[in-house]
Length: 248
Image (cartoon, rainbow, N blue to C red):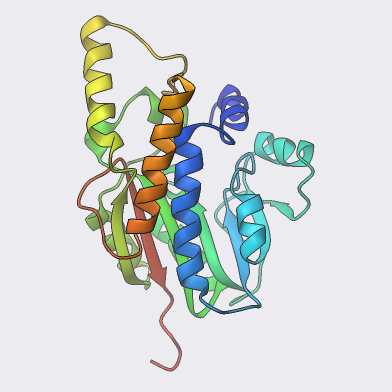
């Protein structure tokens, strides 16, 4: 990710509708995965500027890793402690150390995504889970993806194929951030027609507070619905992947 985009993310991830709403969706999934388990250990891969950490620490003992020095600096400024710098997809943890690996908009940054999934599988316990979010649809590729150094965007089918290649069971896939798909497509078409650009390559759009609140609440509702259904379209993909149980 470009250095300037870390600053933009750190500034907005506590209030901007996309970050706040996505966090609620992630929280709902983790609560379902955790169930009534008390000693719940989470590995937060690609922790970025730390927007997910407070929520994760309420749900379990959390260890965070990132490859970027800039991300580590932001984390240190915010006072977070359990941070490990890594140099590649190899993780400095023993086999079966965690109940959950969370990789939230991380896999699309990694060239060898199947190898990364295999490594995440290694560090989770038997019947442990990997929870992933990634951007959807290659046809939505834009300067946003270039600025964030993405390698690809996914469909639910492609993500499931990569998971199976890594030896993980696909428990659930769904599209997410559903309502935004027609808005984003329309916004990009309008900008293209008018030859306008957004305030940053990461496509943040400054919204009036009532609209930002409305969008956030829409994603809160979506988060509740993810418990009972999968969505057929959206701007993100979410997946719950399981390490096969040794008893199976």
